Amino acid sequence: IQWQGRPSQWQNFWWWVSCVLVIPIPWALWQAAVTNSTVYTLTDQRLKFTRGVFTKLTDDLELYRVRDTKFQQDFFERMCGLGEIIVYTTDETSPEIRLPYIKDAEAVREKMRGLVEARRDAKRVRYLDAE
Image (cartoon, rainbow, N blue to C red; front, side, top):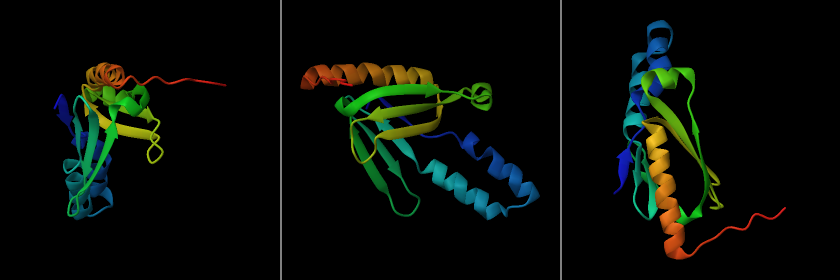
């Protein structure tokens, strides 16, 4: 395991604010449980997503399938030291994967980029962009 993380609870900030105004507190607690049960694991071979409160769902993405990555950070995320990593893949079931509200997301993206290149070299995979 090269990195393991989960989305920050900051993504539920507006749920908690709305609890004071409109939405009942159990709904916000449910959103917190959903966020807490989401785990991203980056190994030297794959990126693994596990999510689900009662029923767990695990999805793997082989790193050699990653075409490109993107780092995105809005003003609120910058204030909290968080960011979003967007992964573009050649996987037909999930061509775009979003990892929102990740702590130190820029460093995680760079680590992922290095692992992707190493995995491509190990598998001798190259992509040809043709237009």
